[in-house]
Image 1 (cartoon, one colour):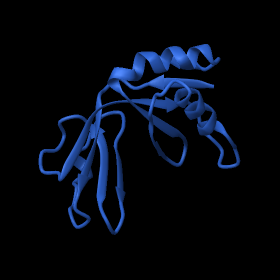
Image 2: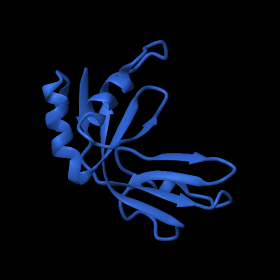
Image 3: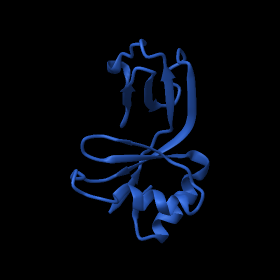
Length: 124
């Protein structure tokens, strides 16, 4: 399994649930928008928004390369268990095709080393 560290730095932005985000203004290799009755969350490159309620900056994204079939079991749990054993916290998000693991920038080098030691191929 190949994991790829995306180039940019990312943030998680929290907005009020009634807020609207013009997704046409979002650019780059990744962004995600999730809306619930309680909030609107956006994962995007750092410094994209200044009108949010809260921002959690300083994330790197690791993409699981390839298309993951919905019947596959344990992909994320295997990766996150290896990272948890080294006290590396994660924030995970998924698309239809694959999963993305967010890791704080200060832990990304340690995470890459741990993943390599556990036989994951990592493109950094």
